[in-house]
Image 1 (cartoon, rainbow, N blue to C red):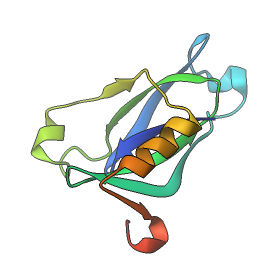
Image 2: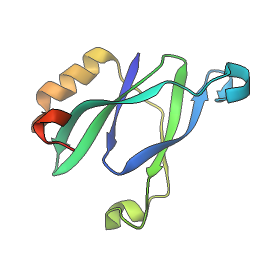
Image 3: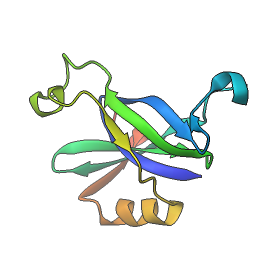
Image 4: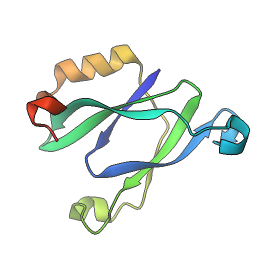
Amino acid sequence: MKYFFLSEGWGVGRVWEFGGLWNEMSWRRKPEIQQTNLCILENGERLWLYSVEDAVIMLEVRPVDPALSSPASRSIGSVVLKRLITGEQAIELLCKAESCFNKTDGCG
């Protein structure tokens, strides 16, 4: 598994694998991408930890509803994440965060 943190209010768009853009017809399924129950607080912003299957090498993220997002994120249409992190790196970031929450702790 690989991991990435994503700001609250952002979602996943296109997904790439080694052969190019993820093709649901070839794979016969969508890529496995799941939001975990963990989030960190960084500069007053909630960042949710997501897990993604190893076949994914890159993904596009964008505001879910640009009208509701912050003024800074409204100017950003989408971002491509090229650097997914390992489980060890995710744990390290969780340990170093200002605050770390579980969904049941009221972070969502």
